[in-house]
Length: 368
Image 1 (cartoon, rainbow, N blue to C red):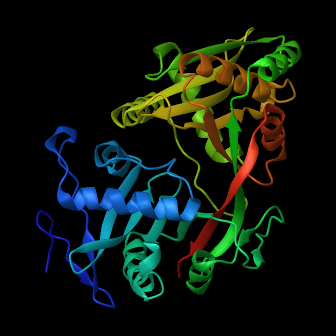
Image 2 (cartoon, one colour):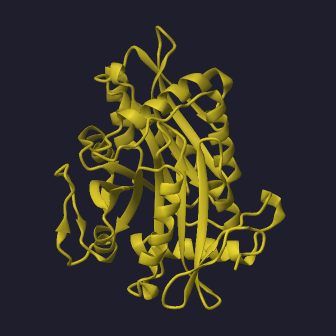
Image 3 (cartoon, one colour):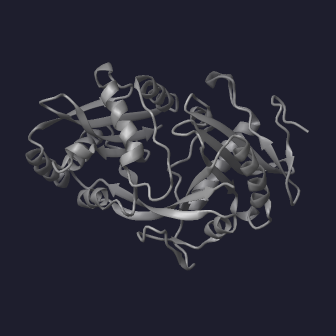
């Protein structure tokens, strides 16, 4: 049995469920199929049930660029179906970076469908696929709502997540919790605090200047931005996740820019430039999808190791937030994620006024 438009078979699971490979539209303007719309709707609902927020919800059209494979990642998705109803989704993203043996995976079930053994059956199908592709390590990121469940701590000793249904499922499947992320939120309450902090940062960073752009990245900054993106994959705290080093060049920056723009996002990059050499040495990204009153995401922030100690992280964050608020005053919330052991960045966020609203887990499974 196969799905229309693909040679991949439909897999019988358990409890009357089946696993259907997702067929993506050939072009963004081709229109989404009912199956693709169902995938997007269930994905969004699963994320909202896990986090209590709809910040990461996308329409099918917005989601398409995020699911499409490129030279750096081979992406595959499935719908979990019972009867005619989509009850869950799954994906396997195989990275071509590093040794090419790391993949990101997730299985998400609607809450009312959990506990039937269906997700276990899906894992029993996806993991052999990953092994057949030469994968040695699987990674997964989860979000958790506060609960009365006992705490589960990572080996880093920083933070914890509740030993809830998701955590118990992953532990039973042989996954290990390697790291805990803090989800923080900033709500606009006037610019006075940010202006004062930016002034202090500028005084400490006298040999640097701020440069900013909206995607697409100007040619003058493409190479420097690419180098900083490559360092983000090695210099950010990774615990024992064994994430591969990413190789970035001008073409990959342009591909990323196109993906963001095709998803309908506005993205601002704020960078610190060393005045004497012209080198870009720190950056911060802010992004907004859809309407101007939706949530702002603070994405990457990095200071190159050789330029630390000049408050450049504070400089690019304050400069970015101030100019962003001028452009998008109706976006009143900014959400960001940081590893709990990343005290330097957490300290900056706390200075700015970010407060914790949730926690996430970074999980790893080593394949036999």
